[in-house]
Amino acid sequence: MRLFTAVVPPPLQFEELSAAVARLRAADPGADALRWTRPAGWHYTLAFFGEVDEGLVPELRERLRRGARRSTPFGIAISGGGHFGQGILWAGAAGEYEDTAALRRLAERSDAAARRAGVAMEDRRHYTPHLTLARTRRGAPPAAPLAVYAAGLDGFTGTPWRVAEFSLIRSHPPSRGEDSWYETLATWPLGK
Figure 1 (cartoon, rainbow, N blue to C red):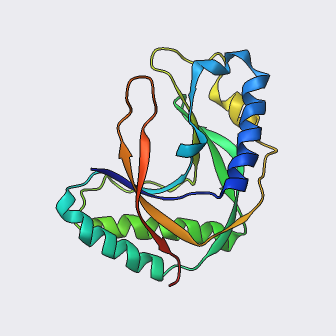
Figure 2 (cartoon, one colour):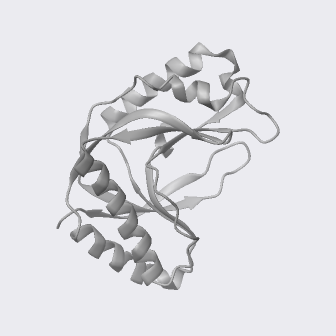
């Protein structure tokens, strides 16, 4: 099964970001050339595990639970935007230094939990907190570079919230014309 861990923002933050994305899309008629993700799929990925053998899942869940206990709640806000090459447009995260560091530590603990549980992981990369908003369509580049859309999010900062949990999520493959869909397998409170 295809698994990852993530922090999912609350409904108010989804509403605020949805309004910002609607303004971005309305400002450029070429925005429809992008494949926009639905709010139901919005999340901050902590660690992507890829295909995981079902036999490893119980150990993975236990190690993630331990990582959650060693973590403490922290505050962040959806803020600004960026892009990975010309493939992915995303919204970022902001907060006090201690809070953004806590988000990175949670990502590192998720990665370490998977490695210790025997999940074959790719080489570690620098963690960039991001919430994917859109992807380019294969063979159909957007009318404007993704940097233009990312710049449209420069002034956006949503209402901060307290991150008090994270989840293990299963990604189901997309069906024709649809995005992947996600199933939450477990959620752990931080610090308990």
